[in-house]
Image (tube, rainbow, N blue to C red):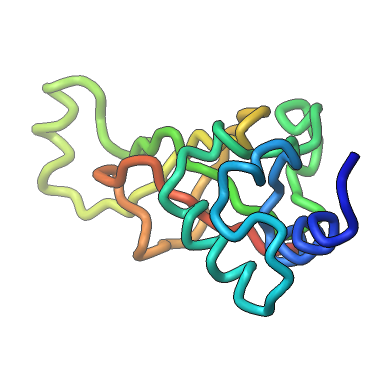
Length: 142
């Protein structure tokens, strides 16, 4: 059973996009602390942890079959892979395209710790790069 203070903390974190399993809170320092800074402290700890260790399912179970592909709530997801789909795979195509100025199109593999989905970068996001390991991103609702 989840106590009232913990439930309040979980709800506060969900408001800003974090979806955390109640059993994962025991690993966080300041567990049960009822202070304004608790969410800030918990968020900084969570940022340095693999989301698979604490993430509660926040993506719809049918996200990969969805027709519109929109997210209905703010959520933080972990990027498990990034690939530039505009880069040629074959060596001969790479030589031909090196003289052509191209716009990148990143394909991202995302997880909430339970469910995985794919996403496409429609507009250039400067903070995204193929070289980034295990990045956490926040997807705001539209």
